[in-house]
Amino acid sequence: MHLASPLELLIITTALFLILFLTHPLHENLTTTDFRTHYLFSAWNGNAPLSWAFWPFFLLLNSSLFIADFLAKTGVITVSSWDDIHFVLLFPLCWWTLAVWRCSKNAKTAAWQAFSRLVTLSVFFEYAVKLSIRIDYPRIFFACEDLLLDYGSCF
Image 1 (cartoon, rainbow, N blue to C red):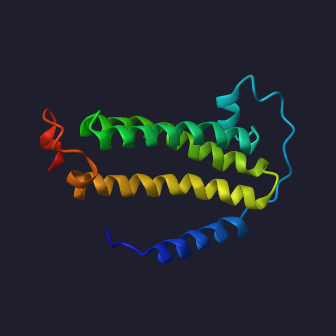
Image 2 (image 1 turned 180 degrees about the vertical axis):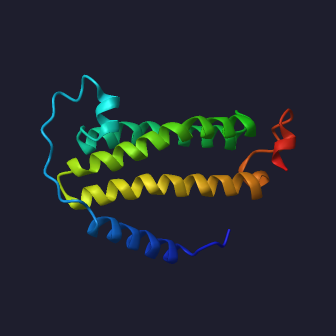
């Protein structure tokens, strides 16, 4: 894949980080009732601290994607199962992105706010790369010689 060189991707990522850093809203932290009682609702409304909205789903999402990729490379799961896992994680990913975006006003620093927004946007870039792999390069990524039942998905 020669869409962009690593240097070009680094420049784009740095420029996006700077744009997000310079355009952050300057709000003070909101004093709210205990957000832990209604965690998902508080995060969705932007009333939870940014770290509470960012880290739990970040760890869960990345570990799930890593395990799915590992299992697909070793031939334990089929290509269709790999697709299903990514599709199932897409809707919580949209919730997470909106929650992080709304809770970023509760960040302690502008750099942390910009970094968290950049990471959430990077996951969508990762999804685009995985879609490209799935469509254009499935025989390279997946162990197609081991997939007897789902060999048709490798083309």
